[in-house]
Amino acid sequence: MSILPPDVYPNGDKCHYKKEKETLACTLESKGKRLNLQGNNSELALLIVAHGSRNPEANEELLALCVKLRSRFPVVEPAFLEIASPGIPQAGENCAAKGASQVVIVPYFLSPGVHVSEDLETARKELASSFPTVEFILAGPIGLHPMVEQILIDRVHEAIQSRTD
Image 1 (cartoon, rainbow, N blue to C red):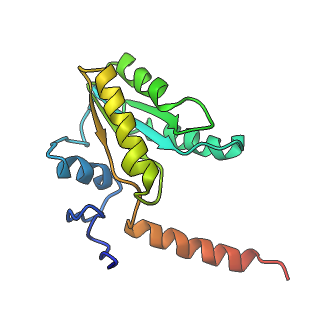
Image 2 (cartoon, rainbow, N blue to C red; image 1 turned 120 degrees about the vertical axis):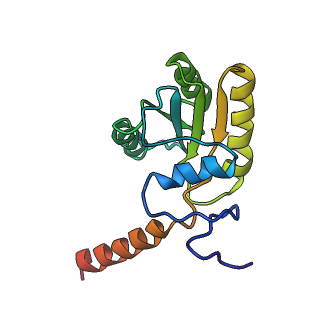
């Protein structure tokens, strides 16, 4: 098993992450979609999915992320795979009710494990069946994005600086 260079997305598509917005754009492009993320995309919705936790503070991070993303996208809905609410079906229904014709399901997961490759794909198919006039697109996980490396380095520095002897 080889480790991919940072400019190769885990599905094999070449993606250069010069801007934060290009992650989503690259996913859509790799699926044959063309979407201008710079303009007003009033029919586009993001459905951001995290695992879910019994710890409310852990779930609040996803809600805070969605609030931030709403300044860039007209519809952003949080969803949890299990344990917490709202679940994926409710969040998908919310997107459709707000007039979305395209919903990008964005996994708030690091790797393409079973939850992303199977559970979220099943959820995508179920949403597409429930809302046939809406296109549901599953984005890839956070994966080997170059910013992850920097975040990990930052966390190492923070841990070293804040350690107690």
